[in-house]
Image (cartoon, rainbow over all chains, first blue to last red; front, side, top):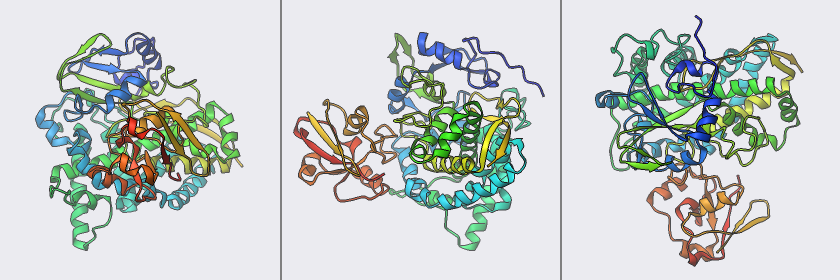
Amino acid sequence: MTVWTPTDDGYADLSSHDAFANGAPHNTFARLRREDPLHWTEYEGGRNFWSVTRYEDITVMNKNTEVFSSARGIRMEDQSYEEYLARRTFQETDPPEHSKVRMKLLKAFSKTTMAQYEQDIRGLCADILDQALAKGEFDATKEIARQLPMRMLGRVVGLPEEDLPWLVEKGDALIANTDPDFTSHVLDKMQTDEFRMMPFNSPAGAELYVYAKELMEEKARRGDTSGVLNLILEPAKDGSVITETEFRNFFCLLVAAGNDTTRYSIAAGIQAMCHQPELLAQMQEGGAVWETAADEIIRWATPALYFRRTATRDVEMHGKTIREGDKVLYWFSSANRDEGYFDDPFHVNLHRSPNRHLSFGQFGPHVCLGMWLARLEVTVLFQELAKRIKSIEAAGPHKFLRSNFVGGIKELPVRVEAA
Amino acid sequence: MQVTWKLPGGGAVTAAVDYGQSLMEAALAHDVPGVVGECGGCLACATCHVYVDPEWAAKCGAAGEFEDAMLDLAEERRETSRLSCQIEVHPDLDGLVLEVPEA
């Protein structure tokens, strides 16, 4: 299917998924950062919203959860209160409620816990790369980037290997719910409201609900209480437990968010290697570059293009008034290319340090739970890739996901010469 | 006022810092390696972990309940461990010495 993709003339419609079909509209973001850093974006599909595009603004606002709340939805689409309750996870809550759930999970996703997976990841990378590179010419998103996070999800969450391809397909249908390559229920073109109570307003959410339920029943029968999923079922310090709906939403979040973000970081890194051939040599030199490379690749990728907050009271900013109840979008994708903060932001510099990018939603309580796993996967994947090749180049144009929420290269034809 | 961060593997950063910010923010302003502060001081990440020189411990106060729980997730927690986002720069801390943990 051909999608009409406009070129970015500096005035792209940020509410349109098509405006992101050639990658994030960076000309528009650059103009907004310069001329209109708090931009009132018209939104045909719902209530209009504010777009915040400067790095400094986002870092200040993101920690101010009393004024900019997550508890009324985190995407630009409007939700009724009923839909919000049915679909929310701890992502859609504020402290202190948010902290209670997060506390239970932090240990399982901590840097120390994740470091124990390094050998596992290296083994998986070897396996994945040996198969892909033998082909010489292939789609790097499909053959490499998609494979590693999917298989790690199985290990970290404790899911049977044979279920993983099905789960990832469903996860894609959830989170890439605006790209016709990933779902037959394209969010902004859907004629039904049948799935509005399901995660991501997607029929795949319903299937994952059933899967999660059966999986936990099966685990209970075996007396198996290991893994991340059981951690979240534990009562909090004050004795509160999460509801069944919240649990199933959390499961969907793990399957969806735990997957495509790292996939698109890896894909963006490989695309950068094709575009800036010096990166491979820097990687092959090794040493200190590995302390900084993953963060630069993840900055370059910015898979989570934005998250939304809702103002809980009127606030003045840049000579304008954000009204109580207004939606406010933090465009991490723009902040990560802010020339007012980063030197030469459109260039991949694997030695960039410090690199306080916002790809993980830093400077706020919702900073990505999986960031240590993501960094480790990206580091190890590129270490293993750099060892195995003499050169890598584009073998055709790459294609982006049709989404203004997830920034990702969904097709990345490359040609490699094995070392 | 002055704060010194002793770095793992030797070396130190000594800087004049402003009142009214946290020691994590002060560390970021002076690019102290190893103090990252990824959650911006929201007690969600433990990446601004430091050891407070015992001489200064009383002046810095004790960790609160949430901070204490977060410190359990930090690598190499010691008795002198604190999250530096939870300590505000104030005149009593002039000359403070902190140690940055091994990465």
